[in-house]
Length: 210
Image (cartoon, rainbow, N blue to C red; front, side, top):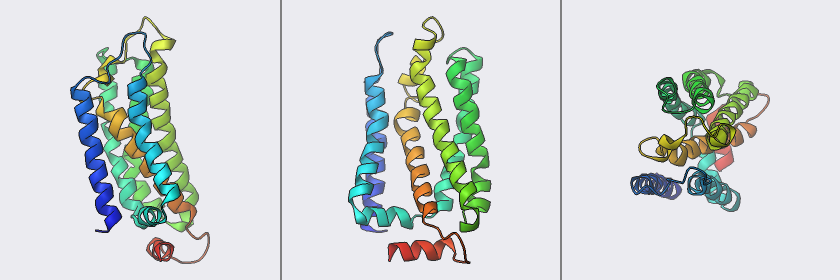
């Protein structure tokens, strides 16, 4: 594993521990009318750190571009667990206006991830591959937006408070930013694939790193 690979794994592990610890200490809990500032900061900080690091470090860019886009896409399969949102909405634990779009969106992305990784992660299907990645980002952004605004849209409805405590708090503070970052990496990789010819992904990535 390269130096950047080891560093990235270590940072992801530290990020998870930090998110878990903050959740265990109830640092994400807010008052009924207070904006979820701590939550938003926890979700946005890893994304900002990644984007700044990617933009300023050539070595880190080369490392991310060398990652296998199929594996990065297969990681999104975990999002089939979005059915949990549907169950929680059915039992009145989470508001339907948030849980149903978030749940069905995650299920759709998770259920198609294997097909996309197997069939669409290639230069001659670059457009479809990028479109799917963009849809994955749109699902995440929609879920976070609805979760944040649900209380404002329906002040007397079911609150999203369960998302502030373990284990659900790990979704917006760890899983969502991580999935979004993987989508971004795949989009950047795909944008560099050749539009014509028979070059393979592996050859293209090797030339990018070299």
